[in-house]
Image (cartoon, rainbow, N blue to C red; front, side, top):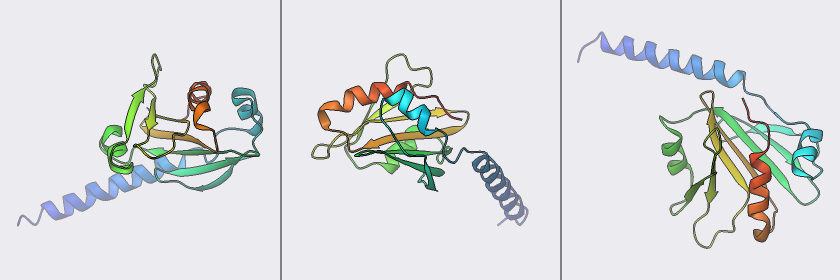
Length: 154
């Protein structure tokens, strides 16, 4: 084994971890105000509560019967497509939002799983997922349109 490779590998890994940590530190913890959500979604939500997400920093906004979840951070895999495949159940499909400047996708859950409004997009080296829980299946398409109108982060 070449002993020069090990220090170079360690240096590369530590550089990537430092870059990822610096990138995550600049991620907005709760990127939307309650007023902004009400204006864009037509629904009242409380101010966001920061938490851990799967991708990076997460935020939960609670409404009367709804929860809006934001999870955003540096892309955790070589491609967003690979991450989506690894992080969702088998049978999950993705539908492109026509004409979206960030090439946003909507998650279509596998058969037997209730659909929910959501968008997933890449921007500035980040992967951003926004989901709404508590929406009736018949209203998912309308909510997906509303989510596409939210200000994009980062």
